[in-house]
Length: 481
Image 1 (spheres, rainbow, N blue to C red):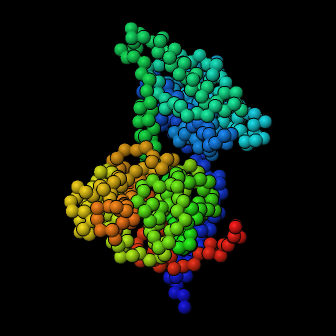
Image 2 (cartoon, rainbow, N blue to C red):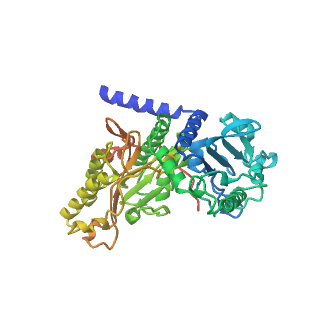
Image 3 (cartoon, one colour):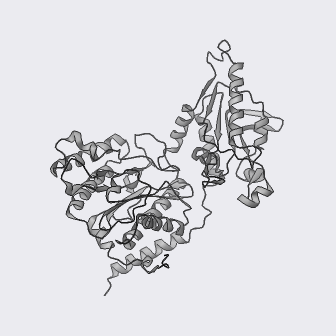
C-alpha cells in the first residue's frame, strides 16, 4: 500500500514538472529591466564620461558555417538585444541634438530581405524602439559619425575582439565598427595633447573602469534575474536526476551528455551555459574535460559538471555517481570527504563572509581527511588533489563578475573536489577516482539557500534513486552496421 506521504511526494513531483513544462518562452527580462540597468550604470559613471559597448562577434566554426551566436553579456544586460554588429553608447551627462535631449544611442544592423531569408528576421530600428530606445540608428551612421571623444574626460569601453569574422554578406560588420572606434579614439587623443587638460586631467581611455562598474551592477541579482536562475538550476537538477535513473554500464560519456542536454531542451532551455563536462574513470580527474568521448564507462565513477542556460542565465551543477549504481568502499571514502567539505562550505556562505572563508573551511576538511586516509602525509600536499577554488558567481556568465565578499542576492557555487589520477603518489586503490559536488547557492539574510537541492547528494539517496526505471530505457534505435 502506498502511504499518504508517498502520494503527496508523487503529486508534488508531477506538479513541479507540469509547471516547468507549461512555461512559455516569453519570460525575457523585458525593456523596463534593461532600461533600469542602463540608468544604474549611468549613475555610476564618472562625470563627463562616455561608455562604448560592442556586441559579440560572429564566430567562424568551419569554412562557411558559424557557431551559434551568443551576445556579449554586458551588452545584453544593458539592452536585451541579441543581434550582432551593434554599438551601445551611454553618456554620463545629457546630450542634445536637433531632436532633443538624450543619454544613450543604439546603433544596429540594417534590415536585409535577402539575408533574412537565410538567417532569420532582423528587428531593425522599429524593433529596437519597442525595446525602449528612442535614439536608434543604423551602424552605417556610426561608421560615418565624427564623434569627438576629446570632449569627454573619460572614454570607457569593453575589450575589442581581434577574432572577428569578416562577414562579406554584410555591408558593415563588427570589425568595421571597431576600426572606426579606434580611429575616433586616435583622432581625439591627438586633439587633446599633454598641454590641453580639462580640470588638470588628460583624456582617460580604459576598459578597467567599465568592467568594474559592470561587476558592481551584475554581482547582486534582481528578483527577475533570480527567478530565471532558479529555473535554469531546477532544469539542471532535474536532468541530473534523470541521468541517475537512466545511466547503465553500456552507455558512453557522450550518451550521458546527450541525456542532460535533451532534458534542457525539453524544459525550454535553448543552450548549455558552458561546454558540458562528462568524465568517467580517469577523465573525472581532468578538471575541464570536455571531449566526452570515452565509449567504455563500465563500473566507473562519472563526474557530470553541466548546466542549462535559460533565457540567458546559466546554472552550474555537478554530481558524481557510480555508473553501475553502487559506490565502492574507496569511492565512498572520497565522496563523503568531498560531501562534508561542501556542507561546511555551504554553511559558510553567509552575508559578510568571503570566498576565502569558504575555501579555507572546505580545504581544512579535505586536508585532514586525505591525511587520515593515508593519501597524503602533510597538509601542504592537499593541493595536489584539490587544486581549485570552491566558489564563483553565476548569472549571465557561468563565471559571472563579482566581489569575493558575499552580500544579499548574490548567487554563487560551492564546489569542492578531489581528483586522484593514475600514477599518483598514493596507494593505487585510490587511482582514477575524481569527485566534485557542486551546488548553486542563493545568499539571503536568513542564510544560504541551495537552489539545486532537487538533485540528491547523499550516497544512500543516489544509490536508491539509481534503482528506479527510466522512461529513456525503452528508447531503442536501429543498429547501424
